[in-house]
Image 1 (cartoon, one colour):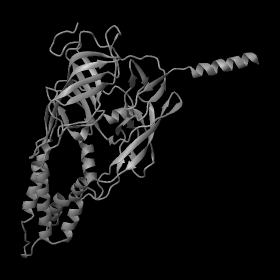
Image 2 (tube, rainbow, N blue to C red):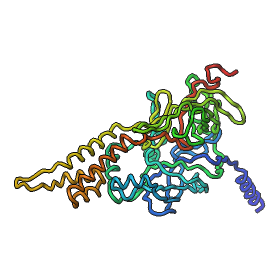
Image 3 (spheres, one colour):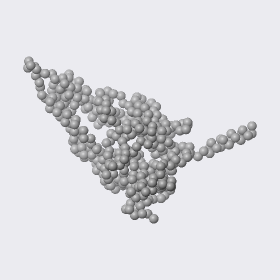
Image 4 (tube, rainbow, N blue to C red):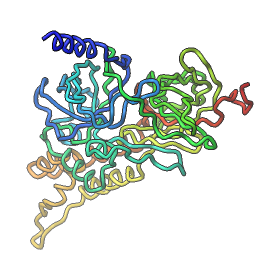
Length: 421
């Protein structure tokens, strides 16, 4: 009996002495939904998986694929500008501002509570690289990660466009919707065995995986403004020596910022990193150029040879204004039958209404006089020309925690090619 008591006491003491690793507040959990979630009520439960490992200093503490649970936290309203644009396209149910919050993760059979900030989801995330650079492969063979980084095909985009033209439709998060949920409080994880990533060959220039610590926008950024990022994955040498731990700070500045202008001229943003601050206090001068970025697919971001980020306008944007203008012109043409009676031309009316107010415009054009159909077509053509050709372009907007791939041209140097001794 005494031996049993000693054993139980020793086991309890050993369990209490298991070390823990704390993930700092502010670190984002990148969670992708495994299944489609219809937006119905706040409080509905959701679940997803981490799309990439989470590191602390020199080791992996949360593996990719870890299940994370949460809920639909907030179903907000619709901004006036978005609602007006939707109404002009015959859409009476524009997407609402819906945000999620995650409260638990499942690790080794244990349920660990956590608290994250409210976050919006991105249905498709694009991996944007410099020209000539190889796009990052999906390293994690889980369906949620594959769907999160898979660009929608032309057929899927067409279906989404047609679905959005319906006057009423339900809002949903498709499978693969990706969330950047920042921890609001430190998260204690049982200590894990160090699992360093594949070492970088010493002869190759270094690459860093990092995240922005503050949002950047070409509309508000100015030349010389500070830029700061945090390293999210430790970097090792070929002999497994730790070079740059997770949590190191990259500091740089904005080199060029150009805000969006009228006539659909988009914004542009270029920034570089000058130094890396290593814990507990070391500083190294670097020349860190932006080599890759992960962003919402619908943002249409691209990188040029310099590493500058700008918004690419699709060439197809000229097609719809041309169609709408042609439809508006044809709507004034009146055909007559063999008895000299004006032809109703149901097809032309439908086309005139569709370019103005979508499906709703099509129905209204059929019921009203021909002048109404022509008016709808003209309004649709004018709105299309304004939005696609005359209106202000889009700015580059990089939210906080945007994932970056940074190329270190001169690790350990002074930024001008000289070596630090």
